[in-house]
Length: 397
Image (cartoon, rainbow, N blue to C red):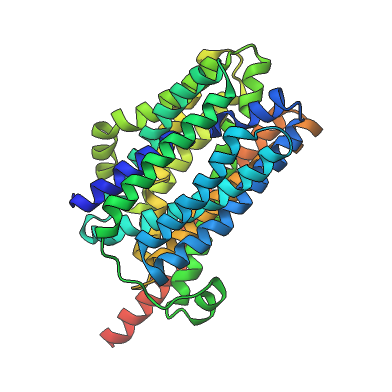
């Protein structure tokens, strides 16, 4: 791998480690420490994710216009200001305000980093995105493991740890990312992209794929929200719940020597890779549907983790393949905003369903959503293949 990609990997690791002190515990903090309902917690997380969606689209566009270094630095500074505010003011409603700003700032950072990764190692294909994905989940493992322990003493320390690690991330960006050369383009916004893109069918293919990606994230985010609260109701401790995310991150990192050859052997295309991962997601939710003790949730998390190892790195890799030259940032912005959209809708959707019915009903709905994902994945590139077949037929004649 290029040296510049290693700097991006290290930055992603530090960034996500800091964020993982807080995000797995957001619902628990709002519900148990701020005394708000699951529905209110869902709305707060929806606002955070909504700000991230805006940040994702802006970050992708900024990448194409001013380059990766400046757009990443801009997002880091915004996030850091909000994190400093959270250290001192984390009551209600200031917690909500700063959490929304954090969502916006971090939303700018992620698509720029993924787009930069694909740009600095174009010959790496899915490998560059998989490397970023592994770094991201190593950060989840470290942050979640330490977060549960730190939170047992004081949530103030959680906010402080997140802030300090983001300072480290800022220093990494300032001293290494400025030397990574990425040429900007003239793209400006979503409406122009949708109207002026030369390859409209590829853009439509991306949006079709992202429908299923949204549904996958809507299901996945329940582990951070409704399932988190559900485990506490079953008398599973906060430390054990945090351990699930530690195992999630460690398995992703340690499992790479095993998962890579499996992907290479059975998933010859990115589409097949996504389909296999979605099927594994369905199995994991069938397990958690009947889970009553920690061991059941542990097994379900392991299965879920295997599924995400197939799906999460594949979707940005598809976006990179579909993106026209000079539009890599925008396409990664669409993908990241879709994932964030799932995180935005998921908490409030799950909270409302659980409050109105019960968590079993929610699981049945999520399984149905995942089944729908298999259809969007199968047919997202249907028109592209048809056009290629028609072109080849015309040439042969």
